[in-house]
Structures are given as C-alpha cells and as structure tokens.
Image (tube, rainbow, N blue to C red; front, top):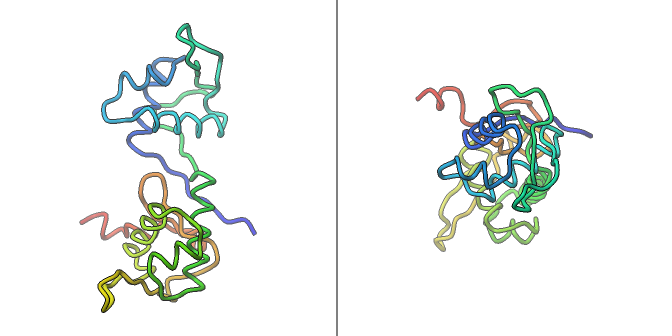
Length: 185
C-alpha cells in the first residue's frame, strides 16, 4: 500500500535556492559564503535532495576541486517543494509501529522496539505529543511516560514531520499540527 507524502520547504531551503538560481553554476562553498546561519552540512543535504529529485545536477569539478552544480530545471523564485527523506520515513514508520503495539510506553521502550536513534525518537514523540496523538506525563518514578490516543490514530501510515515543521497524517491526508487556530494565535 502506498501512502501520500506531503511536500514542503523551509526558509533555509528557500535562501539556498535563491542563491543557486542567482549563481547559475555553483559549489557548496559558494552557497555557504552567501548564507548566514546555514551550515555546509545542511547545504550538502539540501543539494543531495535536489539532485535526487532531478532539480539540480552535478556538472563536474570547479578549479578548487569542489563539485560544481547547476539548476537543471526552469528556475522559479519559490524553492521546489520536496518530500521527506526516505530515511526519515523509515524511522517514523518504525517508531509509529512500535508505539501502536505498546500503547503505553516510555522513551527506552520505544528505542528498544523501534531500533531508532534516541534523538530521532525523542523528537518524534514530542511532536506526536504536540499534535495530541499521545499524552505525555511524568510517572511516579519521575520518568516521562506516554499513552497513545487511539481516537487520533487513523491508520497504519506514520505521521510525518514535514520539512517546514508541520505534522502531516497520510492516513487522513491532512496537516494535523499546528492546527489552523493554533497557527493563527
């Protein structure tokens, strides 16, 4: 069964895209030189995503030996909307599957059941809690516990964290966080 993914972009991606379009051919270092607060690692990952989607292509090496890139499509002022990374989807699916089985859990239980990284698991659980897919509370021992809210779980596909921070439920095909009234406040 295939599930829908939600496309989005971030302000950092928008800035990198604008520079790529202005420069026409460019290296990671050239994009980095014109951005403040955007790491070279972020730029490399973003370019890799654009290459995967055939939006940017490698054209060879620059005189400094760095990879030279160019925009491979007709450029528009808005950055291309990109799907979540496949590795992220695999991680979310593993966590989602684990918490649907466990129903009541703590971070350590999910880590053991899902086999995912601590940071990714913790972030995903916090975001699910924000969107009211699970309730987060302190247990008597003082550790954080979670309870899955069955009424929110509409299917087997994992809730996705979009690139712009929104949560998208492919089961209902809706952005589930922030809710429109929360975003307006």
